[in-house]
Each structure stands twice: as structure tokens, then as C-alpha cells.
Image (cartoon, rainbow over the protein chains, first blue to last red):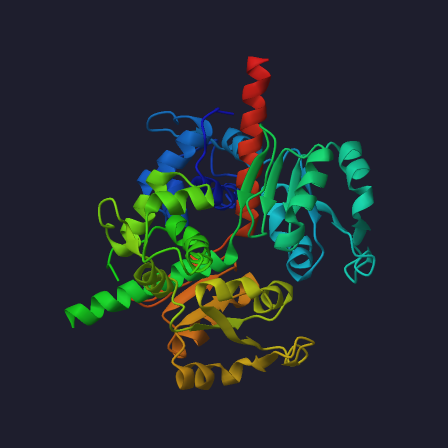
Length: 216
Length: 216
């Protein structure tokens, strides 16, 4: 695997490339060109070349990539050869929606367990999955060497959840709580502000309609 | 209001500026400087100056901004003077989590109603809010002149939901379904791929740990 940074946008397209490559008929030859992939998916050729180059290096001029190798390298980028497990703290509505969301599989990700401090929320869910008490978080993570944590608790308990995750050996946190978290060096935090996403769309569309008002 | 584009990151900080300005004691004078705001919030001064400049224009040298005016302009950017309503299609787990999420208020946004095709999902929720049948979507939106739509249905029904929103006069769509939507010119679509967000964090943290493996 090439060790360059595949951009977030390119990463988002890798599942589509993979699906396309895997759907090729068996007699379609050993090689595949970026042009053929671009045409098959209706993507721009320049973008496809850039994506594949970042993921796998340049293809052979006029020949392209060995299909099998390209599949392997994309699967590696997507982490499909070795599933990554995550834990989630906060089994409220949003937490349970994420816990049940099947789309993580496309990226080799799985939320292995959800945790909550509220005893009314722990136990088995209708889906068969289980919500565990936060007291079991540390043992659970260390036993399975889990490094990814998701925070879906309210603002007021976000730092506590964060501290519990860090004590459990988590090194990357995805937080939905609208609060800046204090973490030691080497721990990655990414904030997800859903309200801000909608506000941003609203703002863009107001600007567009203002512009068209001016030009009308 | 200055008509420049406030970046998404700056927009994300406006609620903090607003909260700070509103918490100033009454005897704190007519003016406020960017330096004082930066110190009060623990933000970098350069960033604060840039944010306020984009939102309101430059302050007076050595004096700063008229506090009252700055409050008004930030409220205008956040759309707090006139609440923006949105509708949501797909009252599954994620849809209901969003429908119930209180964080939208900070940005003057409100999900006015949720809609679903499944009769088992329509009716009153424990929160008191209501899920309506999709057949009522068009009338609901047109009556209230709603322009913002959220899609939280599965991939297979995303285009149908999108078509129904467009028929209802929606011009900006926020879609959580992993599917490219076909929309007429002038309609803005923003995709939210939650699985991709987690995959991206996972990838960043793997790269970081690889780097530290090499330097150890």
C-alpha cells in the first residue's frame, strides 16, 4: 500500500471503485485502466487517476492496473482485511441510531459495544445488541485492543466520557457533544456538529437566493 | 450585515461569541475589542479578528465594535431573528434522533415536522412531536414556505424522498442516505456520510501510529 494520505473525498469514493472492480466479468482480462473505471462509474477521468494514484501509485502507461492488486490495495485502505472495532459511550437516541447503523461495514468498521451510565438504558436491545454499564468499558476495550471511541452523551458529561475512554486506551475520539474536550498529547479528537452542518446548508442557500434576487 | 461568506468554521464559533457578548456586565461600556473577546474565550486573537471581520467588517482601530451592533449582526448571521424551519423524511432511528435534537436552536433552526411512508411510524411521539404521512409533506411545506429538507430514509427510497421534497418546494437538501441524488438546477444537496467520518478518523489514527512506529 502506498503510504500517501488518501483524502477524505477519495476515501469516500473507494467503496464505489471496489464495487465496480468486483463486478467485472471474469473474462475481462488481468488489467483495468483508469479510463474504463471512470467511464463505468460516470466519474471524471482526472479525478479517478488522482484517487487511484494516491491509493496505489501510478498504473502502467496504456495498460493500467492489475485488477486483483488494485482490489487488494483498496480493501487495505478501507481496512476491510482487518475489521476495526469502536466503542460508543451514550446510549441515547443518537447513540442507538449509530449503534444500529449498518453503513460502517463498507469501511471495515464495527461498533463493538455501547455503554451508558444509566442502568435503565443498559441491557439487550431489540436488535440483539447490548448496552453495557460504563464500569465495564475499560476491561472491554483493553481485552479487544480497541482504539476508537464515539461520544454521544450530552455536553455536561462529555468530558467524563472522554476521560473514561482515554483510561481505556482509546487514541481516537469522534465526539457529537458540543464541547471542546481536554485530551493528552497523541489522542485525536474529531468533533461532529450536526446542527452546524444544517446551519451551513441553510446559510449557503440563503446566500444563493440573495444572489438570484439581485440578478433578477 | 456584511455580505461576505462566513466560513463554516467561523459559523461554528459565532454561538460562542454571542454567548460571551451577552454575558458581559451591563457597566462594561459601549465598545468591545477583539482582544477582549479573544482573551475571554481563550481563542487566538488573529482568528477572532478574522471571524468578526467576516461577520461584521473591521472594528474601529483601538476601540473595537459597538457591542450591541455586534450582537445584532451575529444573531443575523445565525438566523436567530427569523427561525428557519426544516422538514425531515424518514422517521427511523436516525431521523427521530435528529428530530429530537435540541442543538439546532443555537443556529435558529427547527425541524418543524418529520414524515414517513410507514403508517406504523406516524402519529405522536413520547416527546409530543408528531410524525406525519408523506402525503401531507407538500401541503405542509408550501403552507409554511419551508425550503430546507432532511433525508434519513434508506438508500433504496432516497430518490423518492428527494423527489417528494422537491415537489414540495424544498431548495436545499441534507441527505444521510448513501446515494447520489438527482435534483434540478438550483437545488443544493449536501451529503452526510457518517460511516465515512469514522473511517477517516480511523485512517488518520492508523497513519499516526505507523509514523510513531517508524520513529520509535
